[in-house]
Image 1: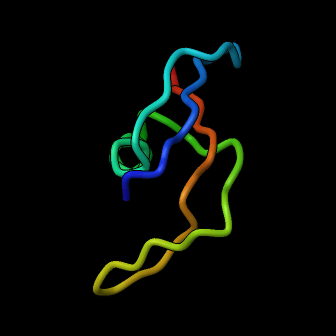
Image 2: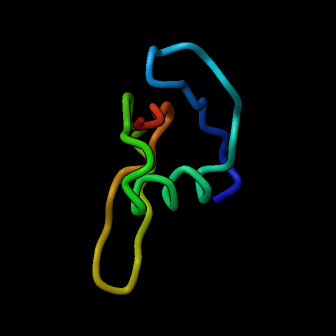
Length: 59
């Protein structure tokens, strides 16, 4: 999961680029939400979901 993901702040201004792994962690902790999803899938032992291309940080 070394794909790159664009990170936006709450007003949709670009802040940074992070790895897909870090983006997934931020989303699971509810610190970010996906803005645009890619066609790539991440498979865990019990689930599968699409990786984000762009995420937005929550307040």
